[in-house]
Image (tube, rainbow, N blue to C red; front, side, top):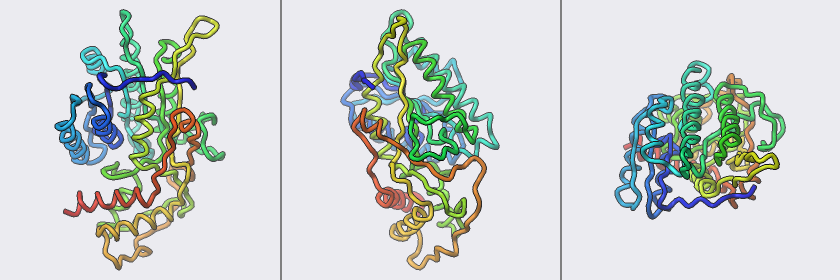
Length: 362
């Protein structure tokens, strides 16, 4: 697909979901790359997981902002607050919007469905409406909307690797359904209002200061407390784990290349719309992943050298809403942006374990 170059310098960039895991790392990457402009962080700092971790990431952002030429503004609020979203767009007029704010987690959606509707449906609708009205009165408006989707949209697809050309009409969790809805909403708005939009289906993102509800993090917490970790589907699971630096590299490249606007034979816009997978393309067996994690925890000094791994594992059945395999076909991303994730799990888990030792074992 043809891309229109988007210059980030001297621009105002809105990143929602910062200081979330991906958002915080993306903002700090922008600080390193940009020589001028403004980055706006937007987040509600909710307590889905320990807010201290978000405060820690926000602290990293604010510290990094001191030594860079880019202005940083943090706005605390909810995407479901339409008046606040409209106010942010009216005041700052962002040229690029990266929507990473969302209620995450497959299992949490079973018990708290309303949180997903508010954040992932209503919140994303408010972003789309604000993007639409950014063109009012002939204004240049938003040049590129990039938003987070998820590998969860593939549900129980049997065909692997998962391709963006695959049919994804059968989500197995409400979280997945909201992410597929985001893609449909974005396509509609791209068609109706000529908004260049790109959705990114992330595959099991991990790394330092990540989300504590993710398996590698919660397992580490349990092991560090001499607890037992549950390995689902009796270990017969594969995941396409993607290290945070690879995710950020992919998002950054996508930001700089928006789907090109064009007009169809009917005189109406051909939707400037695209969706990509961002995943390692090398799914790891869950038992192998756990083994590597435990080895790196010992190496980092989080666990003792004589730690009895077998005594701290429990093989259990599948959880509702989960899937046995995630496996990304990222060829389209490589073809259009020249990028494919490359960081292996040992390198990534080593970085996480060293960070964990520093953060929790001080």
